[in-house]
Structure formats: C-alpha cells, structure tokens
Image 1 (cartoon, rainbow, N blue to C red):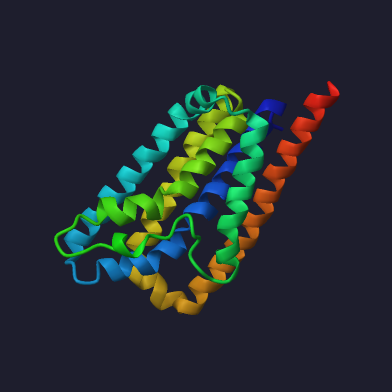
Image 2: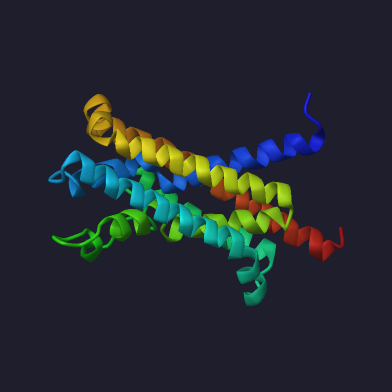
Length: 218
C-alpha cells in the first residue's frame, strides 16, 4: 500500500498525463506529419521527427519551470487560472468531438510548411505538438501544483511520457494510418475530445470551489 502522498503523486501525475496526452493528441498529428513528410527519405523523415519532438519537449519544460513565475508576475490567482484554463480546454475539446483537430493545436494555412522550410520547428514542434493548448495546460497544471515539488516532478514526468508517446505514434505514423484507417483516427479524436471536455469541466468546478471556499473563509 502506497503512503498517502505517494497516492496523491500518482493521481496527480496520471491526471496530468491524460490531460496533456489529449491536448497534444498524437493520433491527430499523425496524418499531418505523414502528409508533410511524404516526399522525404526515411532517414531525413526520422531526423525531422527527432528535432520536432525535442524542440516541443524543450518548450514544454520551459513553461513548466517558468510557469509559476509567469502567473505570479501577472498577478493571476490559481483559482482564476483554473477556471480560465478549463474554459480554454473545453473550447479546444469541441472541434475534437466532431472528429476535427482542436483549434488551439491546428496550424494556420500559412504554417503548413513549404519547400525549403524546416518543418520540424514550424509547424510540427509548434503549434502541432507544443502549441497554445499544450502551453496553457502546462500553466494550468503548474498552478494546480501550487509549488509542491512532487507534483511539479509528476508534471515533468507526464510531459516526458507524452512526448515519448508522440514520438512513437509519429514514427509509426504511416503504418498506424494503414492499420486503423482514417476512420479509426477520427474515432480516437472524438473519444479524446470527450475526455478533454470532462477534464475541462473538472478544472472549472475546482476553480469555482476554490473561490467559494476563499470567500467563505474555509
């Protein structure tokens, strides 16, 4: 039996992992990655993927480390960010429920990549893997951690596992699409949209509860 803090660490880490995995949405990135790299030789395609994942991971870690300082500098309370972050995630979940890529993660047409452009940075690393949605989620989780070192470590581990899953998913991208088909990718996107919407509602309720307890002096 794990001690209470260990259970809390595991619960928080699992929630962070699920939230980030749904927001990053590796299955949703696969078709875009395959389309962008279809003319590349395998070695170059692998090099692009490695650079993209490492850059996205670095961006995510930066906001994990600097996130709390950013919130304090802006004077944003934990409860306010919990509510606003939950609303933002819910908005991101709505397109996914209809089998589309979340709006906060989808690249603009001008970001789709062009001949001679390093697509590992734009649009693969940002905004596909580590875009506004992922950054907002990391800031939200950081605010939820409230400076607890164990919870911050849990977020860091969750980020690492999510990008490891992303690397494997994209590496196996073409085979994955052939295996599950376009329909399978859309089904997975819808399921993850439902999960993300539920997590978003929970964050909003946590923020409202926190404000209520603060005002009532509990």
